[in-house]
Length: 126
Image (cartoon, rainbow, N blue to C red; front, side, top):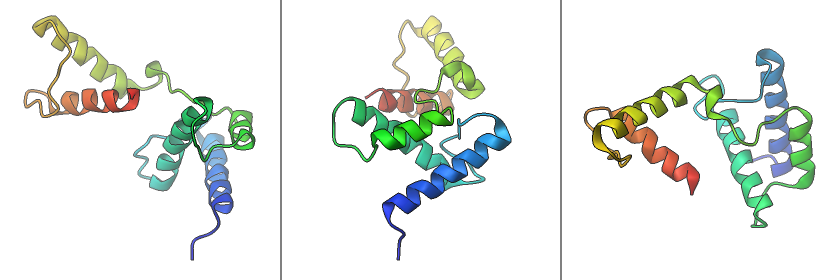
């Protein structure tokens, strides 16, 4: 049987603290191959926090948010912190310089990674 939600949250929180002790930050990649569940959990915490501050139903509590703040959790990951993000952004700027727009198709055969990245950025913005 699954552990109660509180125990599961605490386990991931402890894993995040261990990650920070090793790396010096809490920016676990969403697709973290070493611990995929932790990567998804960190992403979910950001989504739930956004719902909380928008006064929408959320699994995030003030206590959880404070616990994450206490260890230096970043609620918004700045693009400058992610080389891959910056690389795709630079590719998008080049695309715009060539085409005059930023409407990269999701299945852009010339640069499939850029097409997926632009699609993801639109989803994250919603």
